[in-house]
Length: 179
Image (cartoon, rainbow, N blue to C red; front, side, top):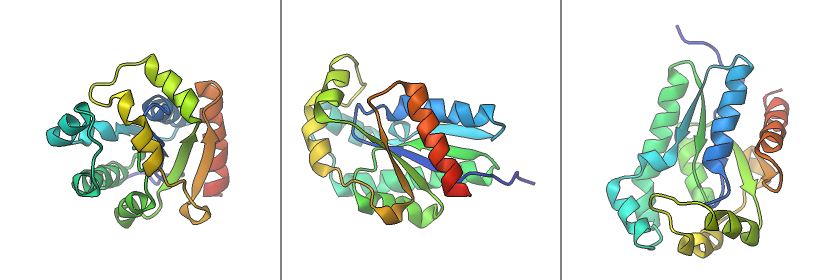
């Protein structure tokens, strides 16, 4: 018998360099500390090798590249949820159609949109190394980004502050969403 989860699965989304993995892991840890069995999944780990190679070469992915990956992400969220754990997934999910695709399999998905300026994120990218996502793709990420709309069960969270403040903001929004 699986546990009944209090909070819906959470998608931590934003452009590359916005802190999805860091915030997602910290959010999952905070939920676990509150007694909510939670699993963090980094959607980057679910990309097929061909997608990673394309990005490594500085070539933005197409929708056709993303559909199978998004389906694998939705399957992973559903599997975590079926195990009785809450899923927190870091996933760029830049377009509405990508988020809609995920919600087809995970209808209760709540979105935490990590919002920051191009300059702030470019500065962060300059100080990190990513396995396959070069900073040269940041402009294409912003060009593709469709901010979540009011009907998407989303919270817009500024990434200007510290990680713990960002997580606290998301937790507060989740409390309101699940009430």
